[in-house]
Length: 321
Image 1 (tube, rainbow, N blue to C red):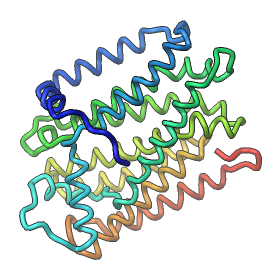
Image 2: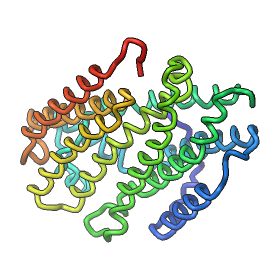
Image 3: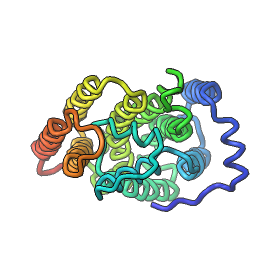
């Protein structure tokens, strides 16, 4: 999904502010202020304005800033899938090949689905009147949506080479997995609140499905991020292997913890299938860490099957999501 980019002078200013102390302090202050505010007293116009700022400015704006590791890793994964080896790979690209939780490139197309659905949700919210029963739900979920955007923008700021290189300190290294996990935690609160609205299927899809997918995907991405940080830190390959195995088990467990929303099970199944495909490609081209790769492939495929079958088993005749 192509997003507009910020002017170069804005990028320069943001780079100067991008350090652990600034990011952690800002996120902590935002968390405190958001949790302290009573959103139930907020006028409808201001409520809508918060959602516009949260999605279009904080979320989309932070995603549009170049320099995250996504691009470099995407190029590496694409080259790996074609059996090509870079003549001069960066140290980070080399180290990232150590992780066994490496989804196939197609998995990340889900971001396009998430943003399209969340844009539909935002536009639909803007049409609501104060008499709509949905407003009471939005007053409950607004602080968590705002926090999720703040945390995701903090992840965008910290998922960069200066935070995750082998020479980075422990505070720098934990920033990106911390903020991505907090993004998922905030969205899990949204998910738990909107679950009670699933009986109205059309409105659930229209207003809340994108947020549900976003929650599940950032949960899966957090596991990918943790394994990636270990890879960048060049931990023992045996430890790398077992953390990958545990990550699959965590994903399966989460799909059952969130049994009231089968969307979560299907998204986690999508993520595990992508991880299996990633290892299948790695084994085929013999590129990257192969210690435990075959076992990880089998475990990922099995986990994907468990998640999807578990989700299908919880479908009721009168309940789609």
